[in-house]
Length: 238
Length: 236
Image (cartoon, rainbow over all chains, first blue to last red; front, top):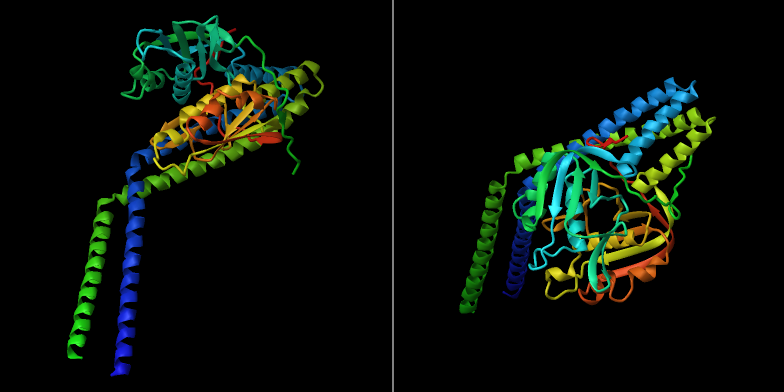
């Protein structure tokens, strides 16, 4: 009898172990399924990612074609220094335009953003302008200015107190309301990005008025670019 | 003895029943989860995303090669012309300014972490896109020459946004810890960490884990995308 009892206990123990193990496995599966379900919910996000990569590819592919063309031209014109320098000129002009060092024109939008000191929503601080610039960049703006101060890669927008009054400085220049923000890029993108329901900047801040405009001229940055600390990393020859 | 045996049998039976029941519930849940998920379309999309990413990677690699060759070709073509040499240096400088070259130099590194020890788990003690924008703006105010966030170089087209719970820089997802590298005069350290400043208030008022370090040698990678000029024309 004693021996039988031992065997029985062992059997029960074993069965319990196996059953618990199976249950545990099931739990794990359910957890994993939950994760895939979350991933499934991200269908919208996936489509966005897809559009994003497509766009990046197209941009890169275009740039590749342009670079290859330039390369061909340089090779063809290697004999003549005159023409090679013309090519270099064209490249320099392109880079300057993107960097904000030349006046540019194109189609885009103009935002008139007027301060209303009597309402909480109507106050304008540096962070509002930073956010607006950020939204314009997300919508693909290629050139931006605030009250004719060109926004470059290193432009800063800050609040300061001068004689007890608050001001916003853009590129260290004092600004006052109304703020006229010009942006050149895809008009439709730019406009719809700012006026999207609930999240668009002009939807959240009704004192920002968005207008489409053709042939906008955006002035160049009238400072100079300084590179003192950043040294180009020299590639080692393979 | 007989009673004991029955007791054991009943206990066993109940245990088995409970366990089997548990397994059945699990099975059922799993089934319903699998059927509701439209996995087919999802997987198709995911494959396509990967395919385009691959295509992009390939194109980008080719572009890098082409640009390298172009650089050499330029060198050869203009080597005998002084004004061209000058122009080429200017082009290089602008490209550095735009974030299109790898750079190194002195500067500071700011590391921000979500507060994971928080009891409340409120929105105040995680890093927001607005925090990153403010810090980047402050760095620019301190005259830095190159900035990156988790390897994403800040270029003229850079947007720092938040979609749901994730932060994106240059349309790429970045997460905590956020490492912001900036090349410029190291003395900006005092200004960035000044009492009452933004970084200070993140630590003191919001309980964020923020670290600011000086460094003599920071390396910042170039932007791995393309800056477009489809819509702008130079005014002569």
